[in-house]
Length: 300
Image (cartoon, rainbow, N blue to C red):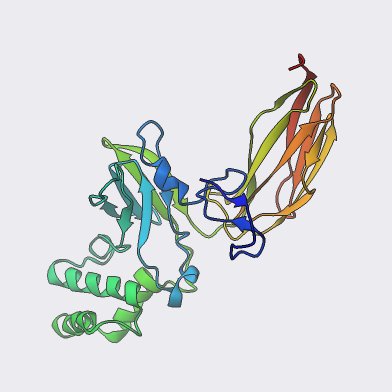
């Protein structure tokens, strides 16, 4: 379920088992969304890719999976509808992952006016280029492009422009991808992916009301660094520092490094009836303060 401290026989070198679908503070990793999507009470939509071409070999955006309990996922590129995707049947899964393997969809028709065989062959060839890259493009797709050049008098320069516009986009205008999970015809969840410009803390606390008696009370603080669209900033490996004032103290170090954009800490009461304040800081992010009441309760 979650990462945990363990013995030396794990390859991370820090004696921590990272096999969990959550980190040791119970922050969910992407894998947790597959489990979360198997129920129908709470809407779920998680996209298993940042949609940044720089994360892919040769900048070729390959297959992407979405995890949802919706009936389908709609994809938009810069607010232009691309395509609707549904999950294939998965043995043993009520809601299987949704494969998103076409980022061109109907755009050649709606934006370029392509129809019929021209749209079909250019579409398939561009999707092939997205999957394999131009250098390793199979003969099948090269033949489609050659046929279009002969049949429709398409030039090499036009082909390059289409590739840059719908596949490569390296150094071009920033692309915003939007994913909508739809159930019973209604949008139940939305995810937006775009190059981030501002990060912020998303902090959850197990309890803000602490009660001590003959022993201390504790609270777990879970921290995720997110971008302006609410996505986990998985490359934000930032030093995060904690200071506590009042009737509580830290359990653990006062500075940790976020891993995969996530971290956390614990606090405990000190035995005095005094409210406490935890301040969370990282350079470049706005500080977050969490307030706690610390009250003496009955002896256990």
